[in-house]
Length: 276
Image (cartoon, rainbow, N blue to C red; front, top):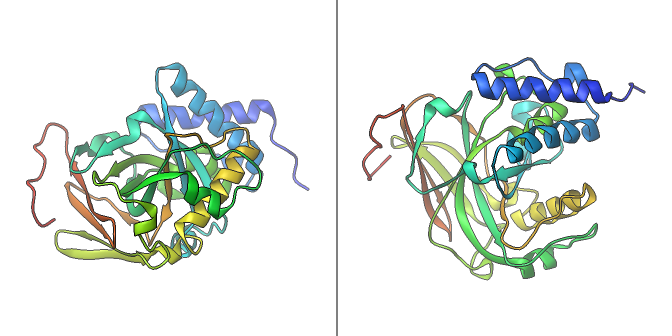
């Protein structure tokens, strides 16, 4: 059995990720420091990085689930879900301009966002409890971003890097969970009139409800339970695609409507409304 990561190695990994975020220069994989399979060490790195951001004034907004879609798992050779924490600075509104300069290696994927009306705290949270605790759903686009050079990640790299989080764009028309067929929900993500990714609710651990139940159990086990008011990104509905330049990405989710991510460069004006 490989040796467990030391406190010094965890601190060094956190410092490496903080430096990459601050400089805009991706870093070497942190699995070289903490090992490729020790998720406890990776979550310790994640907490250390987040504690620094919270100390600087950031506020928790919720959680995100990663690596729920088989297509995304195959992209990275990682075959288990993980989670990260959403901060207030990551959350954006439909069509709000997003400066490409704030990201290192952005990729985008469509998801269902849950907004909780009740706490989900316990080691055995069920799908029924998730349904009862959900206030409403929104269509969402997650901008995944990696501080690891070339997206050369394994499970400990992405966990340590806050589940490769970057930002989230939310639609603005809430829908009750009971009105949406989540397993049967279809998704299409397009850019400049070309469909780049398709998927369904069933691709997200069978249904996004199951993904949120997994998150609730795992987060509670690690002392970071889901709370009323939390925003929860439930995981990719299809393959993520790279963001290589300015423009609008549009996701259409059956029963939830559309959401748009509008990428711009610096002070350049946002794209006008219309067909992406």
